[in-house]
Image (cartoon, rainbow, N blue to C red):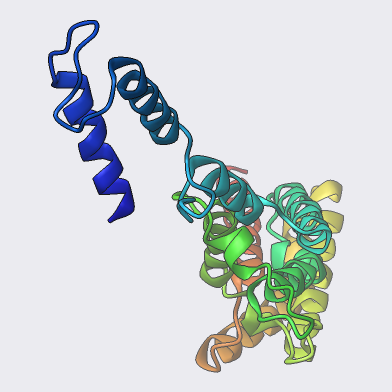
Length: 247
């Protein structure tokens, strides 16, 4: 109310026409009226101490920047996540042909899962990196990268070739051992050029491998490594059959 009264008085003083030597209706001499007017204007130009808005630009900017700050703990987790991603992708590409992703990269993927869990869970020490790292940008880069790698791992059905403790299952080891024996037999007799002996000596190995594959297929324990290995074995068989027919 005081501020409105002062402001109204200032407006009145600014617009009252006066001449030198006359007095105002307020019975103030001209020089006194000018002094009052100037004093009022100075009061209006000076902000009151208690008229500070909690949403001033300076305060908002500092608060916003504080929210963007990333703690050292979160930065360490981010760095660890990037290292695990690179390691897993590198392992996957190195084992793309022949496919041995599940057999050779399961440990890298397990490490990647662990660091992502550490990022996404609520911290017990009141320092949560979930919102800071996973939800602070529109693209959600970390989430997108992890979901892609996790989806690729899921499509490979690698869990079927592993135990619950993330180690290679006995069925997988038995199949890979039978596969190696069959391939060694094929290569041995193929180099000698004795294809009749090849078919005779390698028939048992190949039959045992086919039986294992069929049994694992029924039990849903086949992953991409074993599927690709069986395709490779069939390719060897077709190659030998073609050579026999042409000779």
